Amino acid sequence: VQLQACGGGLVQAGGSLRLSCAASGRTFITYMGWFRQAPGKEREFVAASRGDYTTYYADSVKGRFTISRDNAKNTVYLQMNSLKPGDTAVYYCAAPVFYKDPTKSGGYDYWGQGTQVTVSS
Image (cartoon, rainbow, N blue to C red; front, side):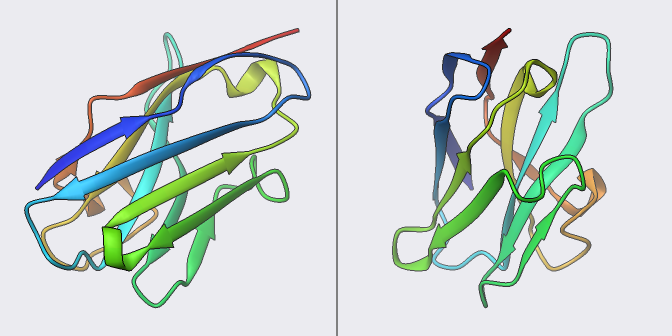
């Protein structure tokens, strides 16, 4: 599976960005997720979407971020609103070989290249 993420950029606090991640190489992926890693910090879970459209969110982004998925295109999106400087990180999309835990990094086997999101104050 190859994952291609895009949509990052520089935005002021309170602004919005939309990330997208297209998967190729498989016809169906049970779930896809987004993680992020800020400088000097560990990679952390952000959001995930299962094939049945069940979604999961980290507490820090609930109410501000929305994950959505187009199963026909094997593409997952992350709409990020009300961005804060603390959201600054490299954002990675990920997908598993088979179903494990969508909220843990260990639940994923394939990772995209990452896209930088920078929120200025």
